[in-house]
Length: 470
View (cartoon, helix red, strand yellow):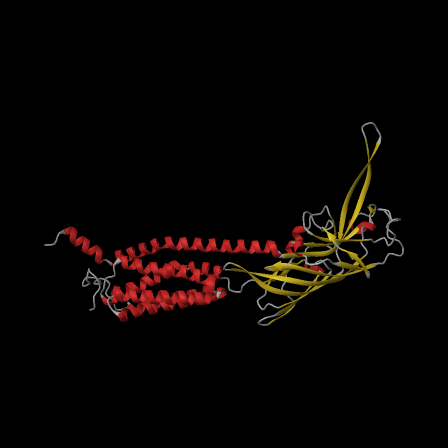
């Protein structure tokens, strides 16, 4: 008569519930290396971003162009009565910002890729032509009809996020007359780089003009401007819709644009190596006025209205690797389920250590995928890594399951899972639908394969040693 403890031990070992519990525990253990690989992906991504920032700091960062705008100084004067009854004059000087009625920006983007080690950064040179028209500034609309206005010290201001990247000196043609640009944004925004040109709205000679002098009768009602601008940048370029009617036309020698910001192009034409895009934005589509005082905070509304185009790799292998590793736990469980089903159907036993070895191979896939993608791109890296792991698992399963046909069943199942995962990764918008249908099909296949199994008798005749051919 067998010892009760021995019978209990045998019963527990043969129990499929306990078997499933141990397999699940092994799957949880394998989440430790998966978590480490996930951390490695984040680390490599941070290093890539650091490289992008390093190159951008020397070539030119992402450009955010604001303007042009008219910035006109004004002074408000008043008197206060002192403690002794004397009159004390007071004054404050601020600026008012006026936006153009129309502005047109036409640009050609010449893109290239800068390499630093294994990382590549998209950079560009933008040749821009800016033209448009201002109406005469209306200070009365701002409640400043009694202010002293320095018409002769007005500025045409252009804001740039990285003015260091301007490639050449440039002038603005103001009503046909050339006026040089100077460094600084001319008071368009606080602590923001840019360029500005001093434009005299009084039409008087500077020697005879006074800060409070209004425009003479000779002053035009409208002011036209036109200037070229050549600057470097990286990753993306953005514009702010400063006109009552803003038109932007861009053409580039890059076939992988990503249109970003608050507006998509009205028209666009994309080929394999080029693209053209046109934006047409009316005044009513934005959330800031045509004129405001510098004491009114407006930068947040301007930033929210930006639009533009980015030049990023359409297949970001770090993002793809990050998404693929999120499916790791499901992948491990389904692979273990395949091996366990082969155990049940063939009456075999696979040792937990062998499960651990196979799970280690599955974890290694994500490391191979990441390291190869940095050199040969994600699609090729995924194919090479998955084929390597499928071959490894199939070869090891032939020994663990004691049969090549059974190993082929496991290898085919893993190959189908890798194919299924690749479809999921490349169809982000339909990932939920594809995932749900895939899980439904997998569960249906398991139910069909195990439909004739008598679960009360499973394991009674199975060997406790290594798997052998039946």
